[in-house]
Image 1 (tube, rainbow, N blue to C red):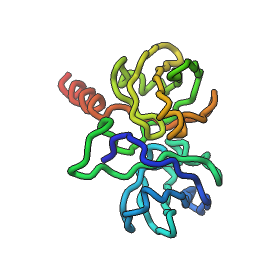
Image 2 (cartoon, one colour):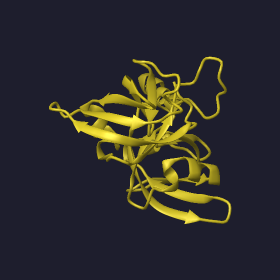
Image 3 (tube, rainbow, N blue to C red):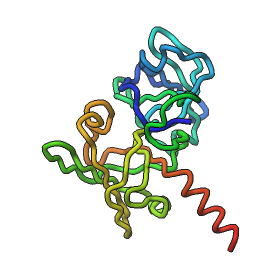
Image 4 (cartoon, helix red, strand yellow):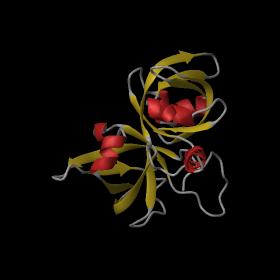
Length: 201
């Protein structure tokens, strides 16, 4: 389990496409690999991946077709920055919210509104996910735990978040432009509530 507190801004070293529509990523991340072992989990832009190899501050991970289809990892190229986070230790601080690293879908940046001390970013999201997003609730965007400022329903639903300078400087969200894709993971508690309420009807 993760908490959406990005530890390091790494970058893609290589992308190898495999025959079965999967891919192998090599990602540089000295901080997250400092205590990593084969089989450990590391979140890359919010996607939980398994370490299959380690080499001098970088790690390799296999990405299956379903993950490439549902997330934005399939669009990564060599040199692209990525948000990295190790799983939370049992005695660690719960800095963000419950993040599984299981991306629910892709959104896209629809607008950016900078101000002196923060920046408001608006994100389009799939209509099927809109019911899980509420004002002042939590959402994960490219692996970053954020609080929803506004939620707007409609034919193309969207939400907004406010990014402080630390988030802008230390994550990929500082450099994303309008139209760029982002990985979204909604609050898992909301999904369980919907399932349980639906089962009782």
